[in-house]
Amino acid sequence: MSTENEGTSVPPAPSAPPVPVESPATPAPAGSAPPPEPADAPTAALPPVEGAVPGAYEGSGAASGAVPGPGGQPEAANAASGGWPPPPPAVPAYADGGGGGHSWGASYQPPEPKPGSRRGGLLAAVVAAALIAGGVGGGIGYWAAERNDDGGSGSTTVSASDNPADFKRAPSSVAGLAASALPSTVTIEAEGSDGEGGTGSGFVYDTQGHILTNNHVVASAADGGKLSATFSNGKKYDAEVVGRAQGYDVAVIKLKNAPSNLKPLSLADSDKVAVGDSTIAIGAPFGLSNTVTTGIVSAKNRPVASSDSSGSSKASYMNALQTDASINPGNSGGPLLNARGAVIGINSAIQPGSSGGIGGSGQSGSVGLGFAIPINQAKNVAKQLIKTGEPVYPVIGASVALDEQSDGAKITEQGAGGSSAVTANGPADKAGLKPGDVITKLDDTVIDSGPTLIGQIWTHKPGDTVKITYKRGGAEHTVDVVLGERKGDS
Image (cartoon, helix red, strand yellow):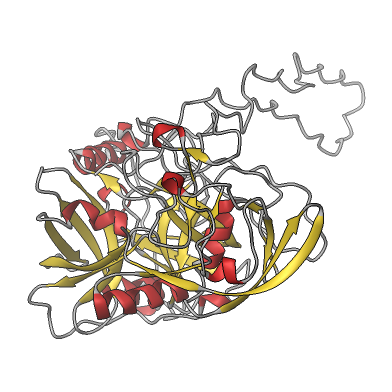
């Protein structure tokens, strides 16, 4: 299961050589010669690399800003009536993930923030952080073992004198929280009927054996494939897909012959998370199960569009929590915990840094830009999937362009396949919205693009009333829109 959305590589940005820091002068003994001047001391940064222009695009979209579809008709994100948002436009040149495929989304260069506005740029070319199968896990294991081999050098070590019996870790420490959460976290192996598959993570959702994870982790095994979940104690259980939501990138699987002593992880209120809060990520990066990393919440409400590298899957949109806790391929579906050990998000995607990957795996790793689906949204989706087996999406009933305008989400002149851009008698139509209108705010959130609008809408439920601000002919208007619904991913 290939899950990277990648682009072409770019020469690394130059960095300035370190500049020596002057130490306080020490008086020299009388009669001694002055110290020699350092030779070739660096004084200036290296010149910039030609062509390394962050955000440079490959290819072009339709003139109207909509994504061109079959027959030259523009396709747009139909948030109305069963149509699916097509992929955002071309890949930025620096979105290098280490393999083939195309990135869904576009690099965001944020404009100057407006006072009082809350916005986060669309982060595209993210990697859906599940591990590609095919010997990568074994290669990483060998690489790690080789790195830890001292080559028989016979070096002498000194043991600490601490008495383990006297050393106790507080339950609230990272070690204590990890020890509590690890038994409820699983490594998921998915294999399709064609033998293709991969590895991801998940965690216990309830005592009935439901496991919460990402859709892209289990998608390959959804139709006649094999699925299993392995706990930290090594016990392995077969599993089956209960339901999955492509758009939300959330899935629920259920253990077959689930044990009776399952301990679900507690779920926090992700709306109360603050930037700077501590985070703990647990999962199986590069197949290395039961890995724990730490960081902070770097940002909230980060609009992210992601997809796998096959080029055939639909885009997933999230209004993500951003963290600098190390998240790598294989972490997908694992829990992101707060400082109390409660789940605040599902680790889902990363911004890749460079090609090649750790240990020659071919998949790039963490550069401190990880993204998690807020647990409040994931919990609502999980309840729906357990109840009916299919997701429900809130919609406004209008198609919007998926290019990066930076000034709003424009309602296109035509919908997908030449249909009407505004669904008759739909929520947008009833509110008076028309093709050409540019939506700039949803409630108090600034909207800078179509994907940002979709991500914001999907944080709500059908039937919710939202306030939409839009521009038409240079004038600004505000209307209330009651969100409609679309069932399923088709």
